Length: 309
Image 1 (spheres, rainbow, N blue to C red):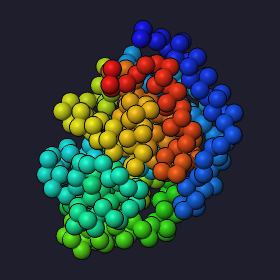
Image 2 (spheres, one colour; image 1 turned 135 degrees about the vertical axis):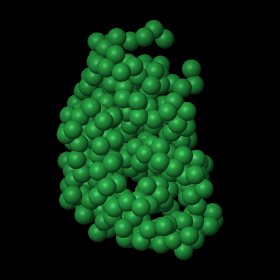
Image 3 (cartoon, rainbow, N blue to C red; image 1 turned 45 degrees about the horizontal axis):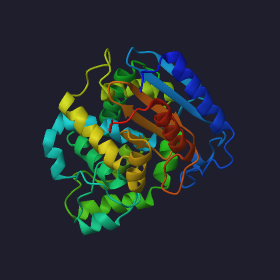
Image 4 (cartoon, one colour; image 1 turned 120 degrees about the vertical axis):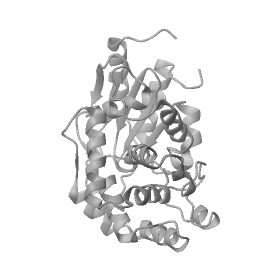
């Protein structure tokens, strides 16, 4: 398919945003985190950061939202930078085939999470980064990484969302304690979990998130934060594990590495072409943005972007 210009892509995004505005079923917000349940459900934003640095956007693309599990992509990058392949002794690289907060596979695998994008895996990654540091240092490092990636200092943690999440983190605490029982948590569970909840409470807009994903797309001019070899591995994990038990379906329908969050955001990567961020707060049954997933499928179909050719 012939490469699309920024003007062509703007028309595509405008059509997608219009279709999403008219969608009768917008999914259901993450009501188990009260602060997320309060977000107006009628919002939709999408943004692309192209190879030449241009931003193409439509809808509520400059409205900040809670990135939640999308933060796991960036903490994984930080952890690999610090620990290298030693990290894989504590977390696997296989799709879970289960819900993002499931304890079933964790029990089967004796406290080793299947991958770094399910909750247990992300908690283990956060625990690994915490080793020898204070939570405030880890969170400061995360914000510094995100601000460098997006070249935007206006990225912050929403403390109200973090507190809301922590107050309702019973299942995540169970995951942490289960890993601790198997020797796969090195810090106190409360310390690791508090750090994890604040990590998930980072707020970004679609424009900021698309810019932050540039380094994963290998775009010219993007900050060089991770080696090319690690970028390939992170993208591989996003493709196979980034949408939990709907990862295969997303790969089939969209064909791009992507990571979702229960705040309704999705970060997707078209290597060499664009970094893509989409947001709509209503979720489908698997905990991924309903309209965001549909918008990504429409975008992939319109552009022909796919890692499968």
